[in-house]
Every structure is written in structure tokens, then in C-alpha cells.
Length: 352
Image (cartoon, rainbow, N blue to C red; front, side):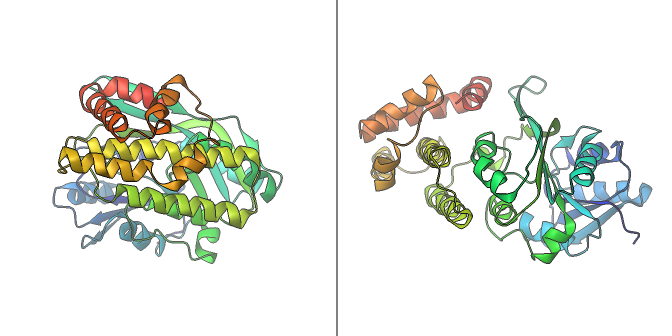
């Protein structure tokens, strides 16, 4: 297998209506020195067969067929085979603009970056053809030092630019030398990126927006009730605190960001409990919400956070009042908007 400049890694499962467009968006890249690993993670539909058809006609595409083990195991299987100087991770139900890889590689080469971060689009479809597009990006910057990046990271986190893998180009040797793999957990991309950010020294941000994250599928994990979401969010908050402790960063901006991030996810956990697919009884839901808002972290972080919008100030009122009943009804309203007016929900979430 000839070495390529960029190894594109894509897990594939249950995406027969989307995977073709994802692959074609890589084939249409103006930068052509890439290899792609499409990892069929035991998909029950024809996604794997579709990947095989593309691989038959394009020697840069390699298909791995494996038993189902989840997206982390699929990505990790490809990491062990990838030979590229750079790694790029994408999802199989999204697509990329044609200049993405070229612009990222140029930035990496010009600045000797271990990590390149770019902007992206969130396309939320509220009908089969109509969508609301949210743009996430910031001005370009080449961080002069590791410390400079760490002290500015709160701003990039705030813009949702550091959580996901598909708006980033990673130096392959940084991944290999530090033995970085996706952990076997739900929402595995977040802890993977935290492991990358932990000791990264050379970070470059470019202003271009390239990747289209598609919110369309009714079966998407983001629309489901998860019984363990609150515990998961608590765990993630612990990861963030550990990262900032390791970085030795404790300035006012970073503290405020961490507090607001936690409280925004409290609202998400409340909505999860009031989600129509949640099987708890109304009294059980109110008890769960009371547990969430009675966490001592809520009382300690509320005074630190600064809501960025009138919407979020309103969302915080029932919590500031320590009212489980009002918070429950707030969650009900959010759930109804989320399921009944997808466009409005997307706009409110984008501007929170």
C-alpha cells in the first residue's frame, strides 16, 4: 500500500443513504494525495457493499469489514493501518467541501502544526429539503506557544471547535507516538480530542468552513433519551476540570466558561428527562430533575457563569429558584419545541 499524505478514516454503520455522498466528497477534494479507510463495522444494511463498489473503482479507498464493535473500534482499526503524515476523521453521514484537505494540509505544512482546527457547518433539516445552517468558525491564528493556546482554549471550546474530530487535521506521528486511540465509550470523539489537546504544543486555527455536519436522521443518537446522560455529563465535567488542572490554567475567562458549560449541560440533562421517549413516570421525572438541580456544583457554579443570551438567562431562572417543578415544565417546553419545531430549536440552540 503506497503511502499517502493524508489518511482519511471513516467508520461505517447503517448509513446506506448517506455514505456514497461522504465518499464522493473526499474524491472531489482538490488535494488528491490521500488514502481512505472505510471501516464497515458489521453494518446490517448495504453500506459495506456501497463502500466496496467505490473501492473497486478507486485504489485510494480501502474497505475494512469487521464485526460490530462500535465507532471507536472501527476508527482504531484504521489508525493501526494508516500510513499518512496526517490523519483526518470523518463521519459517514456527512460531507466536506472540496478545498478542505488542501487548505488544512497547507496550514499544517506552513506552520509545522501538530493540530489544525477549522470551521464547519451544522445543517439541521426540518423537512426533507429545507434546513437551517449554523456556521461555526473564528479568525485564523497560529499560536506562538503551548501556553498561548491553553489560555485561549476556552474561546475555541465556546465556539464548539475543539470537541469534534471532523474539523481537524492531526499530525500522524503525534497520534502514533502518544498511542492515542478512541476510547470504548459513547461519544468517544470528545475524550479522544481531550487526549490530543492534553499535551499538544503546536496548534493552528484556520478561518475556513468546510465540513457539513448533518442533523437529519430520525434515528440519530442526539434525538434519543439516554438513561445515563446525567452521569455521562458529570464524567465529562470531571474530564474538563482535569484538563485545565493539567494545563495549570485558572484564569477568570476559563473558570466562567467551565461554569457556563456545566450549566448548559444541566439544561440538556433536564430536557433528556422530559424527552417523550423517556419511560419514567412524571413523579420519577420530577425526582430526577430535583436530584440534578440540587447537586452542590449547581449552587457553586451559577454565580460564576454569565449567560450569553436572554434565552439562557430565562432557562436558568427556574434553577436559580431551586424549583424542580418549574424546571420540569421548562424541560417539557424544550422537548416539545425540539420535537415539534426543529427549525426553531436549532436556532435557539445556536444562539444560546
